[in-house]
Image (cartoon, rainbow, N blue to C red; front, side, top):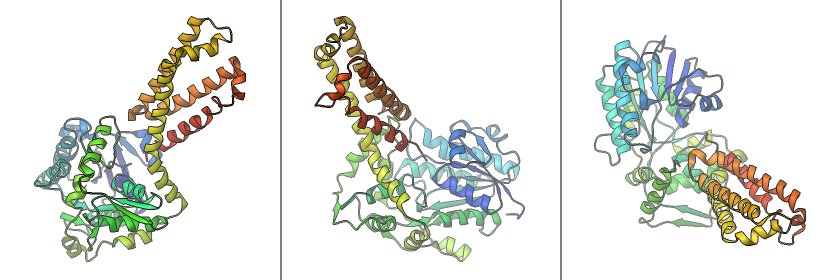
Length: 435
């Protein structure tokens, strides 16, 4: 590629890979801009970086890309979804939109660097990999200058998806749980992936398809042990290897949560990919560049690790527990209020309220508790549900202080016990913030 190729549009710019690619390109002197669905999220992840709002689910015709490609010399596609959240999402994001992008770029002489995945192809075992493979094939057939980069398990300073799951498992104290312990895995550091993108843009990598993986093949258990060591957690006293029949029901539960908007790294596609192995052939990239991808231990040695990384891993492990506890607490509170309505209303009638008004108040707030307990289970509402829980807790405390102040001295502490729930809701609100 010509040396004056400086203006690069990065798709999926605020994602795990996309954000690091944008930063690396801008450090190297490129005018890198991002494209994605959320301008607010892009501003948090990549402050000061030019951003274009766009959704690959809606960029399905060549003319849809015309305004987005104005002034671009190259496009780097880092966008992707693991599993359909809506029918046809994988096909649209991985194949249809990319085929149209390739045609639009070929017409304008714009080069495309595609971040695919090791193992992607028509005969792969999951629709994720097959749809990725169809997009790769469409780019190769488009006539655009194209590089297909197929990384293994990407290890970076941040964590998302598979790398997030590794850190969560590594954070389990005393024991080390692991399923599919013998699954083969080859990794690549984020720096090497960004270097391969830059090599394509700079003309240092011939057009073609390249697996970006280290030379050595590890087992998943070895990768997990290396991750735990890097984080600085104490070695486990026991390695708990789960039987092979356990991952499928766990994946089924994660898929069910996916229908509620939760993008768990334990969904069936992720489990299937681990079972089939995350592997590739490093030889073509080595032959084209004269370089090898850094091995896993070298990658971890190059990444800073300290209290922040350990805290992040622990909080990621605790987040689903916190959501479950809050949901159960608020559901139980509401249901018990309805079940024991007469006893709860008596607290108010003893203060002079009419029986009808007291029961109406108990019923209203019991249903409010139930609504909040259900709302936190729906991912798009979960963050606001936490704030709702905090607000309702404060209303309870203020109203009880005004109407029944003696409850602060109750030996069972009904008001005092509201405070830990309030604090947990605020903490969970922060844990639910993405990227």
